Image (cartoon, rainbow, N blue to C red):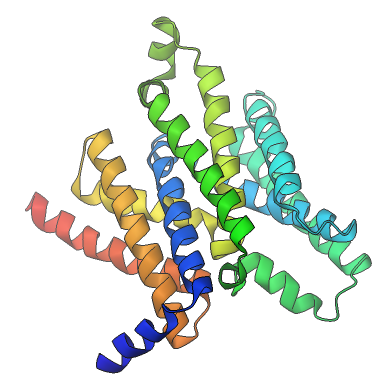
Length: 281
């Protein structure tokens, strides 16, 4: 334990570690806010679908040699989030089918483009880094940290500002429409916020693990708490703590950042699951 603390203190003296810690905490906070809404609306896999879209957008950006691709990826992901919502409302294509269609299509096209137009000598490494996060969170520049902070503030501000509307739309869209709340508009807002979160989380856990970052904290909190506000606050706390712990453990023990964070989330879920069982007893 002493060696762990000593090694951790040494790493914390480097700016890139603090960049990773700050960005990780911000991303975890944003990811947790809408996790509860997605679980309750039974739309958990929208994060998975949009993360694959982001992978495809990154592949396109690499083909056209965009050095700073975050805004390009964000634009593509937001557009697909809107299309996904519109397609999901189509009676001919149900929500889960549209997610699967966009998810698999974007992943396949993205990988195909990276193979055909690849200029990298380590294609497998690039793909692995994009899918699983790898160590990209530890190579952030001050500009990328600033962009992440601004986008995170936007996400948190929108969630707080429209909290009551999101709450109503989450539980009963028919009632929301009856009292004058435009449920389609707020569903669209939720989809756009999710797109922001997906792009932010790409560097942290990679495109394949983003859903875990969004869903596990919410599921953990639901084992113990029942009110929407309590679950949301607890989910945010769990998400930030797990992300920070996962980042620090991965730095000290040289494990993949994204996988380590998700492993910590899984462990915490089982802890809360057991606590919930005892609470009901």
